[in-house]
Image (cartoon, rainbow, N blue to C red; front, side):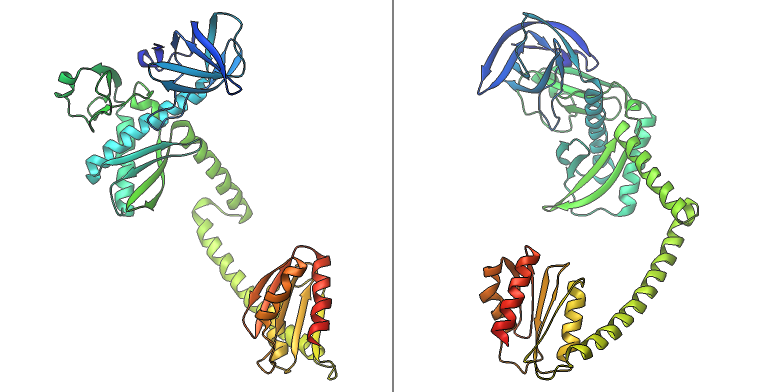
Length: 389
């Protein structure tokens, strides 16, 4: 049985322990210590990492009463000095304690239970048993959970018996029946939990709710606590600073400038669309000049698929012939007609595209495709011209 120091104190960063046993399995190395502060995976919280006698600890899992440490190599001595990756540990303490506080306030304000908790590398989430949540409710929840941080409430943990448990208004019944550990946030809740936590809510610093998503009939709240929330705020402020400088304005006027910029973009796009349509008309007239050709075809150096389609439709409005257009830069092809031809553009592509590593399709009067290389595009164009002429 491993003595679990993280139950004694979540703030133990360094310690010395005897090696109980070590072994190799499936090419990986494992060490069991007589006592450890490395927290294993559990309760939605990832494991701790760190070093054992200057050997990297890669993973930590709980098997029965033993804590197994997967290490980069087996230590040579039977007594090892262990050091936690404290930044990772404290981050997990902040996120997990923040989750307790957030779930408690969700229960108080919204009368809902927390269904699950996940602590990821960038975000933490809780799923709550609600189908929807208004912006006002979300705002009130965020204000209240941060108010509890300002109160700097004490957080303590201890083990209780089944008899003692019956006297506590716990949030939910524990999964285990023995060694029942309670994490109590003074004046807020009693929560059966085996995770690591800060000693006071003030150590959370800040909880920021980031978004709400519907998830299989309930809601998923994504949030950040402590240093994660601060880093997120700093990053967002850097972006805001850059945008404000780009528009030569202050924070409060950014949205006005963005709306004005969007209006200008829409106006410019309308002008460009009109000019593009006019240019397509001129190009279409040029394409149909050769009255003798059975097929109107042209391979352009640089045209987008949208431009090819627009030009093809413009050209088919001026002639009953098939129109085959391609773009070298885009490696795209369009085949079209106005209905006068018996050829099905989509069926033609379906029959021959795979021979030239092309992918696409369409309807009888319009089809489009893309190719893996310019050589494939050129080869298909040559085949199409021969087959359709």
